[in-house]
Image (cartoon, rainbow over all chains, first blue to last red; front, side):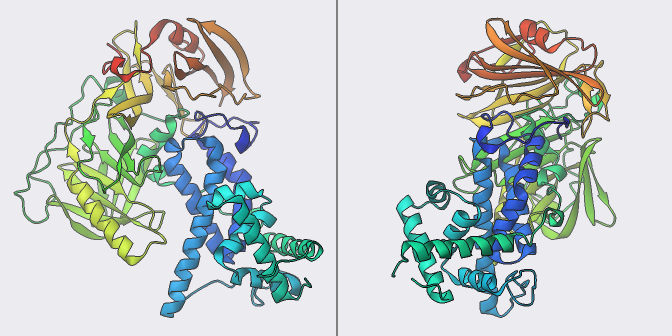
Length: 185
Length: 394
């Protein structure tokens, strides 16, 4: 483990120099402190429940631990984590789908469900429930754009699609939301 | 699909933002679990990999560290012949090496799944680790081979406790018996990723463990494939001459008491390239309460790797006093601070003959200070590996 130095500022991903500090435990600690909450919240929006979201984020950090020595560009560590979380969320949702088909689903209530009672506001519940039923790409674009606040080029890079596709996907998602939740076009 | 006009679209965006924000707030920082313990924490080799980037401070047994190379019993082990049938405890076969030589870590993968190759590894007298995976991606497999006596069974075959250094160790809890590996007993063990790892007794007194790819969300079929691959990888692990380990610098003018006691390397262009290593002598002293894992004083931590194009010696640590100097024609930064009450000095050169270089020293009066070490004892050999050396201390 690293020698901890008091007062070391949390590095911003964009300012990370190349390679040399990336694999330090301090950096991992900093990344966890700086990004785990936000990533977990993102995962909650995608998978619906906190335990699954925490699992996904923990897995993402474990993956970063294991692969740090081979991460060519440490400045991409946050993007790597974000993509790992996205992939982890997809896996969770796929597993759930299979489990539902087999009749073996055992899921936590999603935060926007009535039984969860974690979220106040019927309108919010309705919006989130509709988002959860959107196609995967639309759901991911909305979360990356309106929760993380990523730009369309960043979303395009994360999802491996073009900027135009990001814009059109978001537009279609919003239209679907509006149609379903009663927003007037 | 009909798209929204601008105003309703903005209203919908606001509703989405509001809903997302509210849902996100259901998770608070108090809810979060701690930083996950990586496999590397329980797989002692992992810390060496990370050390390649910034040397970590941890314990090596002083005697082993100082005398390790001198008394190395090279790992010329030949795994028990395949004539053996059934599972046995490797009791009658050849013994595992008492120590590994960090300069010639004689452990290698004999087989890996298609498209995968050795990526990196590390060695200390008690343990060798290797990582493998697809090119330019993250490692998927990690092999840890322990020297004789570093692992012991606990309970009636219930778990295996392995210790690479007095401060780092792992307990592998057996979940079920695995197919014999080359005739030797083997066990599946649970891992933190929800998958199964493999532990097997590769020779008398010696155990090895193979960390498998993440499979928490894998299908049953994928689990089966991973297990089959793990058995095949384990059966083909070779304990004998491996790829040459080359150093990009010669350490000159040092007395014969200095030893390289641990090392991290990467695999590139068909050779193992040493990236970081620690030098110790009998005079090296361990300070267990410095940092998380303690620190060696009078033991240079050296890291030399090809310089990234925009590599720097930052980030600047506000706790350190930095001075910029020119040594041997290279611009270097010398950082001085106190860590855990122990003076700490680090010399960093972001661009030295194509290398990024760091020398870290702990202690009030190290035998050779970081700047002196760089000035008088490091001769860089250039970035062409054809000019590198197998004997950095020679």
